[in-house]
Structure formats: structure tokens, C-alpha cells
Length: 68
Figure 1 (cartoon, rainbow, N blue to C red):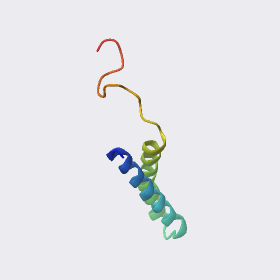
Figure 2: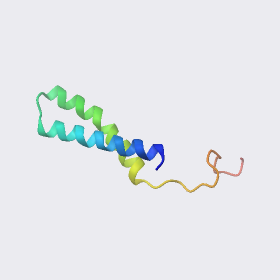
Figure 3: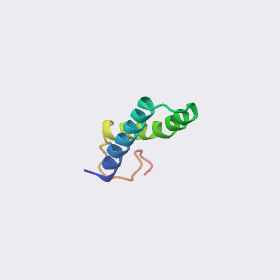
Figure 4: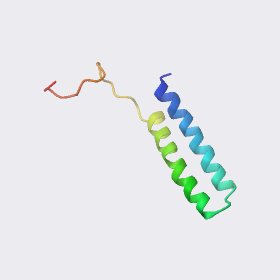
């Protein structure tokens, strides 16, 4: 498992736990707003890294056009 995939899974777990905490224990409107702004990028990054397949380039770092 690559480090990117590990960090994606970890951020997905943190985002889901954060949203569950916000949904189950809403205390203040400001806290809900700030928590949503904090945990939404965690979920987006986790979904992007975990579920979107990797690119299949032979040599990483090379640009995919003829000029290279």
C-alpha cells in the first residue's frame, strides 16, 4: 500500500468521524459551520485518493505529450 493511499484512507476516516460528531452533537451554529469547513476537504481528499484509480504511465514524472 502506497503512502498516498494510506493518507487517503486516514483522511477519509477523520472526515467521516468529524461529520458524525457534528451531526450527532450539534452544539452551536458556528461550531457546525467551522467543523463542516474543516472536515469537507478531508472527505474529498479521501474519496479522491481511495476510489479514483491511478494513472497507468510507464515512467512517472514525464509529461504525456510529444515535446518531451
